Length: 329
Image 1: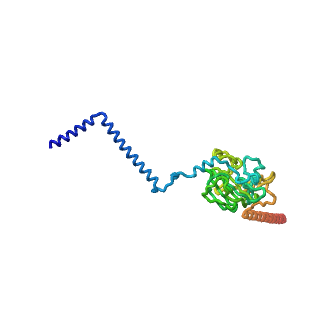
Image 2: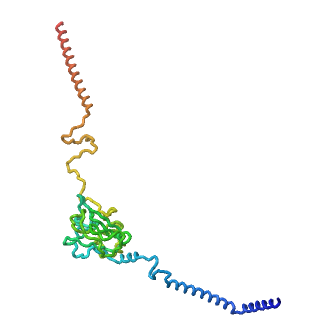
Image 3: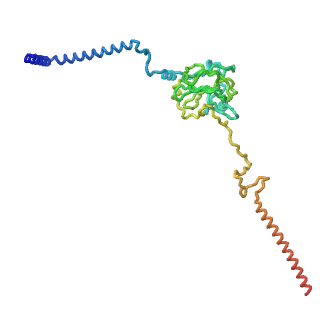
């Protein structure tokens, strides 16, 4: 027992002497750090080997949360609006955009007559010089939001390029796109056709550019970037805002006012009341008479006649009595 106690005491004393040395604790810290670092490196190496194996089938190019939409928006901001035709030199404008600040002649040329009603053109009607059909191209890259068959307007395609800015293509046939399709500038959308709304334009495409539902003049933004329209302030413009389905609103042609009576003409009161005293009555107009009043007037006339007759008879009798009295005298 004593020998074991001596051994333990000697071991404790040697350990205490070791700890009392100045380099003991730094050595312990360094050794602990080395062990921890070695364990971390070993764990990382084992993880890398698992990724390189066939345990996971993920491709190295997969990036979570990335889509192509942001890239499309950036591309749109760099693109310029183009006419929706392949060859602008062979194209003609059949109907211009109705500009409220234009002169009277240009405004009249931008009116469309449908069902005997004047409609201001909210876009431009593009046709070919030879009158033949042609490919309708996307003016700008974007997403197809509407593909509608409309007999009056001749079918319609709408493309959204950024929030609030769209282009519309009406009077088209053989549509090649569907809602949700991503199109690039210059892609063929459809063929130009005809519409009942503007039969005089023949084979054409009605093209519109809209910002927040308000139609703008396409000529002012051709060969300009999308950002130019985004920065444009349309609050002071007075262009016609169309209804939700995109059809053009009707408006009466300028100069149509209610007919006013000419000088010297008299108008009858709307409520049917008799004219006031001092006013003239048009020839041929019969004054309104109450039948009861008329009967009373006739009765009064008869009574007056009888009274007059009675007075005459009394006078005759009085005269006779006077003659008799004279004879007796």
